[in-house]
Image (cartoon, rainbow, N blue to C red; front, side, top):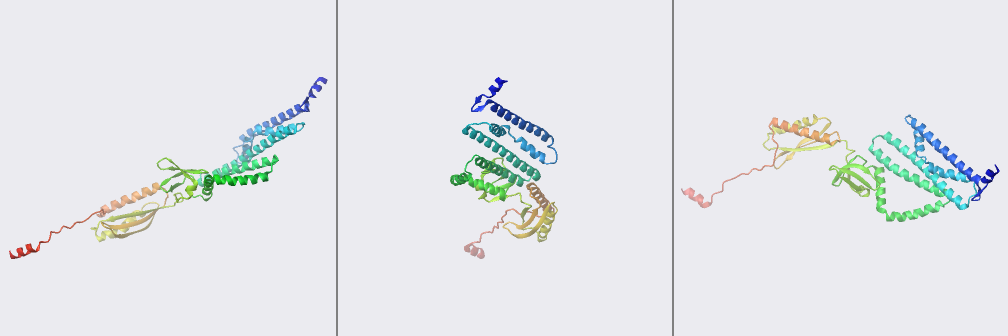
Length: 364
């Protein structure tokens, strides 16, 4: 017993060996308890994940983001606090403990932010506007969380955060001047997200390029063209362009123009406006606007009809316009009305006789 006692009293780095054993035992037991609690909570919460309450889902997200290595650092600092260690060693252990704990807090905060975003995505369903906004908000939240974690970490380590923030502000101005093009695209992306001139899934036309928006990034926007290639626009350039967005379209306007030949009798010309109007109004999801004889062309008597297709779908627009056109052709064929095409009538007259030839003819 005396030998064992004397062995435990051996000096190791200015501390009895028994204190080292006690600190190691405290650290091992603490880490084992934390790991056991994490395992039990994970199993229990996974079984309860199908419930209608969200508390268990939040707790499961937090447990899944719990890192034993990061928590071991503050546990080690707590266990070693009973020892008489050199100031530099204590400062190093405290530094690691603070960094480990604050990083773990950042992981928990990120888990809460991601859970909140996932819940709103489920509530909004497949709404492209909501998906675009939430995707950008997720990026911004992660930046905010880790910036706050970084500032709190430095503050707990004894750094002058006020001076640091001031220095970062001055350095930020220099960086902003050097990276103004990148920052311009970044602010343009935020403007797109907030103002929503278009969202993911919209069909847009920018200049001569057109396609479906696939992704709105922090610097560029990607659009899939009709021919299949991927068009990549800079966000700042995109906002400076005139954008045609087809998503807000509620209906499509159709201008129907044609001409008939000049030989068409007046009574048949009078039949054309009511005949064409009846054909247009017989279609589904169509609103007739107007139809008139509009003028005398070089080779035709011209008519113009305006109607609206009450659907933004291009396939509905094309099918309805085709049906109206074919029915007009059939109706005109039944009435004997001919469509005009470019023609020219040439009148040929015999040449006038010369004066000498006229007098000879008179004498004869």
